[in-house]
Image 1: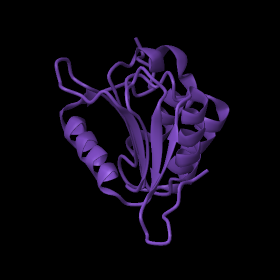
Image 2: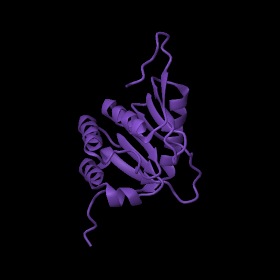
Image 3: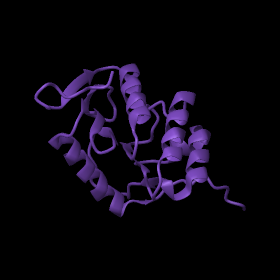
Image 4: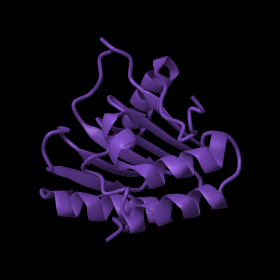
Length: 169
């Protein structure tokens, strides 16, 4: 399922047009990540990351990496995560600075797409966050670099999101 570079070293694209295919490509990308993971999504509702396989893949990556913010999740809204993703929030709490969630500020211009980048070279993107159609690209390419630059720009001005830690009120 992983797109590979062809004989010339060019990145290969694999298109998809269903949520099932999107979730399968996303999960495979997370499983194959070795060093870092960037996720930009409105709310994670369509990703399938809260299921057992998704949690296992994120947990494995978090255990295998060292350093701050190896897994970064950038959302427009935390509502879905706070209400429907207790296992993901436990991972955020457990791995502290290795795994962070941030929220896009009000009024900030953001792309219509949703995307996941693993290790700076594997990209899964949905062209519009309300539709399943998208593609997966394997190997280093300018499109992945463009998405990564967008992510970094949004990340610097985003506010802290859910940490998974109990409020203690």
